[in-house]
Image (cartoon, rainbow, N blue to C red; front, top):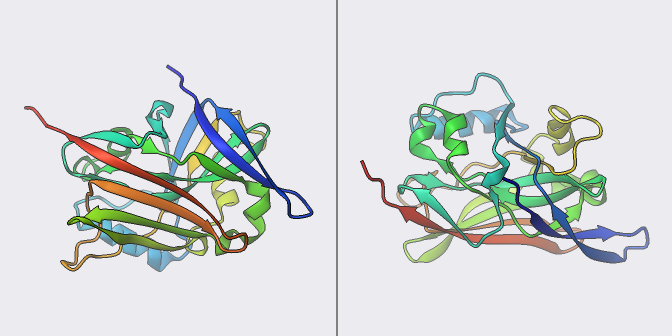
Length: 238
């Protein structure tokens, strides 16, 4: 079954004038890129983070997980079975109208299932994605300056959960070209990795939350793409 996503896509002309148009996108192929840190120490930190939850280390770096396109959603709420899932902000590329666009998404994952299969854990959860995007060619030259962050609703207040720049992630074009053809199919989508979680006062890193807000900020053009979603926990019945 196919569904359509809609993105308000912003382009920047040579004279600096911005224009926005809404593009409908029917997802045809979804790739979740994992272990995409540019710095090996950062990769090792994320591996250790997940190993603390019982997740085995990756077989290679980076890894490309093929996911069902039906998982993608722009809704303000997703449903998750049990209370052990959590999200993570990721720069997300998609191919539409003959070119690549950049937005922000969340690779929401079942952390319990992740302890025995990362691929299955990712396939079990919806993948929220924002409703706005920037033309990739407009930001590619300074992608390292783009700021990626997230907040979660924890104990009744919003707290910072992730914070950093895309300089800590492998160049997005190299990740994209590692799996997609030079001229990909319309509706090709890739999430490109994430940042480590900031620990709370209890020292907890990766953790579930009732709501999450993900943000991609462009400091040069003073613009941001923001998406917030809530998680409805479904009861696990044996």
